[in-house]
Length: 229
Image (cartoon, rainbow, N blue to C red; front, side, top):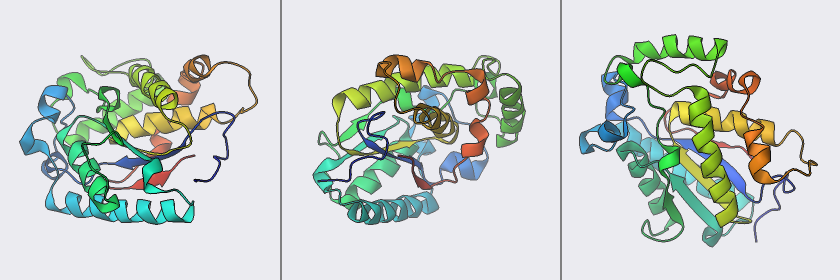
């Protein structure tokens, strides 16, 4: 059996986040954020990204052993983008988990933040969006998603995971902005574990500007694994 989560009164599972390995868009300096483009084969992992995913899988395996989790308690939840699918697949291979099993779950709510009219433009444009996020995370880039928009769909994903699993080691394989925003929610959620509110309401109450505007503090490098709870 695995360790009892530190904040078990708040969440039923232990959580790790993993940003996908270095991708072809990373190497080309492109913003690839739409579901249409993100699922194209040519926008998958670069060679370095495959190695980063393998190393993340090895680290995750080591941490599972340290926390006394068995492999059958592991759940891999991942974005439907090519680069995240490929990352999750490598991790599953390292753990000797069948990627077609119920231990691995694709979730569209975990997809990349959509940057609207900045699609396929330079990564340099991210800085403009993040500056706007800090001022008001409810304002989206033109044609895209605001931080609050992403947080709302992540709330759905988290509630679904918490409903489906209990006592599991859940690794969420997703994207830079998506995982930054998720971490802000999880941190806020665990600040007051004694609340009597139901889980759905607790998560929704975390989606406030003062929390979401801080998401850049939780930045991850490509292929970085981080234990959250």
